[in-house]
Length: 292
Image (cartoon, rainbow, N blue to C red):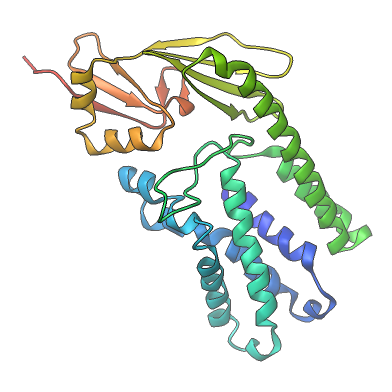
């Protein structure tokens, strides 16, 4: 999920649990929630190189097992910054808000396609549901509505309504995603269904043998298929996977594709979930032939 939405989710945690005693120092409780909702992405700031980013981002700092420590880190930051107000704040409540804000971050990322290491360091896998896109307009609109309604209904009630709307929306997206996946999974050996930026619209990624098919689908419509013939020659695959970044893409993707140029000198390995107009944002080129 994008940075803005994570921050709003953190604020939403504070607003939904807001207590009367917090009013005097509400900015600190709100700030704690927002910082905690953003702090798992510290890994992306520290490791922004291609291979390291795929391996580390949404890894250990996004683990359910490490989430109490991430909440404690957010509390520590607030403790350092709010040094003049330390005795006036309820640190039990700051930790409580921070914990659920971290959890909101992990849950939001899990709902997207990118994948999240929820069980690291014990399970080195990425989990994703594909119910929501990375940037989700309806959730942003729910929060805008919440800020409008809080003047009339009060902060707590307004943002509890926002959370109800979010849960209903996610539930609807999830049921549609699962229904579509059930419909198409028998057609392919491997299948991924990912939410598009328009609600109710999804993209199907299916693979049979060396053929990958990509097309849009909803409950009532189906788009034209993009068909990609990939390489399944074991020698070429082995050569490609000798490249560290290529091997990382193969590990990261639910399934991958490899294509050759017309001279069969260079191969491109790609994650089909991010394929658009002939290229993927997760791909790399590897020399597999001998240059003349």
